[in-house]
Amino acid sequence: MTQSNSGAFTLTNKTTGDSWDLPVIDGSLGPSVIDVRKLYGQTGHFTFDPGFTSTGSCESALTFIDGDKGVLLHRGYSIEDLAEHSDFLDVAYLLIYGELPNKAEKANFDRDVTYHTMVHEQMMNFFRGFRRDAHPMAIMCGVVGAMSAFYHDSTDIHDEHQRMVATFRLIAKMPTIAAMAYKYSIGQPFNYPKNNLSYAENFLDMTFRVPAEEYKMSPTIARAMDRIFILHADHEQNASTSTVRLASSSGANPFACIAAGVACLWGPAHGGANEAVLNMLMEIGHKDNIPEYLEKAKDKNDPFRLMGFGHRVYKNYDPRAKVMQKSCYEVLEELDLKDPLLDLAMELERIALEDPYFVEKKLFPNVDFYSGIVLKALGFPTSMFTVLFAVARTVGWVAQWKEQIEDPTLKIGRPRQLYTGPEQRDYVPLGKRS
Image (cartoon, rainbow, N blue to C red):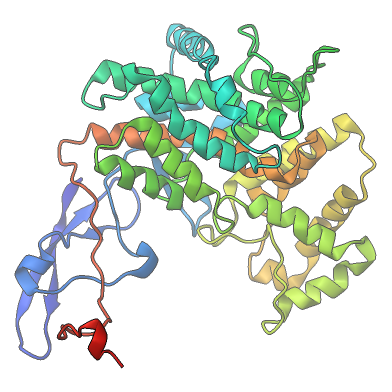
C-alpha cells in the first residue's frame, strides 16, 4: 500500500472543535481507505460498523472485486479467463504463489497435490463415530478439525516447510474427505483416490464409483465440476474467509483455521445459496406458476424472495454466472435429463431475464442459480452443495491463511464494540434479591 497524494482525511468534532488528520491509503485497485488504526489513541473513539461493510480488515494481494462493474480478479486475472483457459489446480497455484505456473511448475504442483490425496487410514474409523444421518457439513467440520491430530508434522505455523506441507494436505485431502462424507451418509464403502485422474475427475470418481463397476468419466461433466471449483475458489474477505483469518491471527494451527472456515460457510446466509435455489424451485412447483411467483417477488410485503438472482456484492452482474451458465447448458445437453425441476429453472431464467422489473433492477441470475442446477443434474443431494463449496474455497482459505501468516505486521484480531448494557452496580447477595 502507498499513502495517497491527497494526504489525509480530516475528522472534526463539531462539539469541541478539535480535528484530526487520518492518513488516506491507496491500493492498486478499488476505493482508497482511511487509516483509523490510531483513531482511538488520538480521539478516544472507536468506529462502529456492524457487519464490517465499510471496514478494511487486512491488506491482501489475492482477489479484487468491483461489484458495480461486475469484476472479479485473482492476482489480476479475470475469473472469465481463468475459468475458460485454466484448470482448478492452475488457479490454486496462482492464488498461493502469485503467478500462473509454467509447465514444469504446474507438473510438480499437480503431482504434489495428487500424492497427498489419501487420508490417514485411522481416519476411516473416525468417520464411523458419526451417525448415519449426520449432515455432511457436520462431518466435514469434525474431520477437518481432527486433521491436526493426525498430521503433527505440519502444524507449526512458524516453519515455512510445515506451512507448505499443510497447504498441500488441505487442498489435496478436502475432496477425499468430502467424498467420504457423502459415501458414509448413504451407507456405501469409501473409495481411494486414483493418481491418474485430475483433481475434479478424482472427486467425481471417489463420490460416485461403487465396487461393482467403474465410474464412467465424462469430459463434459469433469470440466463442469472443475469450473465450479474455480468459480468458488476465493471471493475476497467474505464471512468464512474472515473467520479463517481471525482464527489464524491467534496462532491456531492451519487445520483448526480451515475447520473454522467450514463451520462459518455452513451458515445458510453464506454457503447455502444454491441449495436455497432448489428449495425455491420446489416451492414454485410448475412452470405455469412462474408469473405468480414473480409478482410475489416484486411485492415488498411478501416474504417470498427470488433466490439465485442478484448478489450482495455484485450490483450489475455476477461475472461467475456467465461461465456457470455455459457449463449448465453443456451438462444438461450431455445428460439429456427429463427433470421437471430443471425445466422449471430454465423457464424461470428466460422469463425473469425478459421482465422489465428484474432487468431494470439488474437482478440477473448469479452463480448460485446455475451451480445449484448443475449439481442437481450431476446427482448430488442438496446436503452436499455446501460441502462442494468448502472443497473449492479451501484453496482461497489456505492462500489467505498463508498470506496472513507471512505478514510481518500480523496482530491478533480484536474487534471493538458499542456497549449498551447496564453501568457498574453493587452486588446483591442471594438472600436480598427480590
